[in-house]
Amino acid sequence: MPWWQLLLDIVGAALVLLVLYGLTLIVRRRVLSRNGGTFELSVRVRTDRPGRGWVLGLGRYDRDVLQWFRIFSISPRPRRVFARTELDYIGRRAPEGAETYSLYTDHVVVTCETPTGVQELAMSREALTGFQAWTEAAPPGQLRRG
Image 1 (cartoon, rainbow, N blue to C red):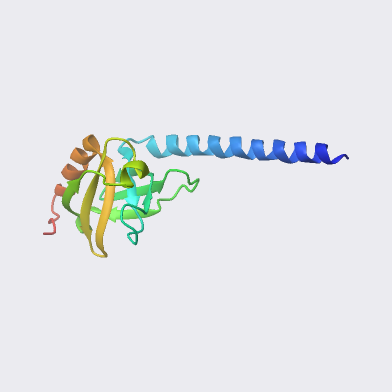
Image 2: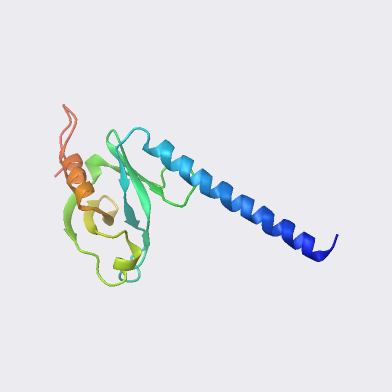
């Protein structure tokens, strides 16, 4: 087999894998969104450099937890889970510097207190309204922390 045919086979296989990956991402997002309560949510995973460390994702409310899924992962499991009783809203701010390029357009940075320290999330203003209502709500018979 000539080298160029081998090269074409490799390129063809890579394209097939790329298309399968894209289809898997589409199906995964549809499955995650099928019960509603999902929204675009970015999480700051590193704070060592100002404005850096943001990872795009998808947030989903599931009873008393907020699940966060990486946008380009094919895993059906959430990467992080935030319990409602352990998440306190502190405030919000506009993205600054490099954050404006790292985050979705028109998202605000939300600062929350968790048992492990301060956590920054980024979401749209509409999603923030729902997030604030969700964090302030508590199921019947359960006391809110704070």
